[in-house]
Image (cartoon, rainbow, N blue to C red; front, side, top):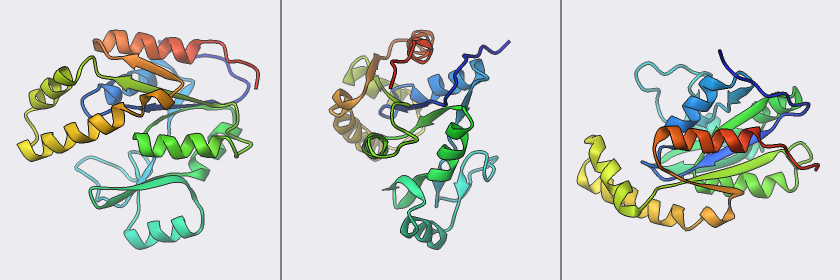
Length: 201
């Protein structure tokens, strides 16, 4: 039976980590274990993959529509990744937080940095954002995990490793850093952060 926590105001838990860190797995388990927690559905201009649904997996927009939303200030953050645009819609976060719903947002370090800056200025986000970085146990282990997937070409693996080096250097800016062990340990650590009493804002 799913567990839940009681909260009078919604919270936003932001999770980042390099490819291969296990962040997607731990986020999926959090969402399955806590009925009080919902995933923030982000937006993209990339086409849906097999089985993906609009408004469920992503908000899928063409580039013109996405660009118009940028110009209208509708995103908390956005970035270009592999020539595709990705972003977090303000209304997706605001309406759920205002209703008292706790949210989980899995984004890269660039997006998390924008969210931290915004949280200092946005009254709805102030005191409600917790950032967590999933740190690989070692760079060698991260490389082994990426190669173990057996899904990427060598060029892509090298690109991901370089990105990972840059991302790991940004971990000091997060509220919490989880040193990744196994999936159960990572889940226990993130669960502990989520369930910990929050300081008065």
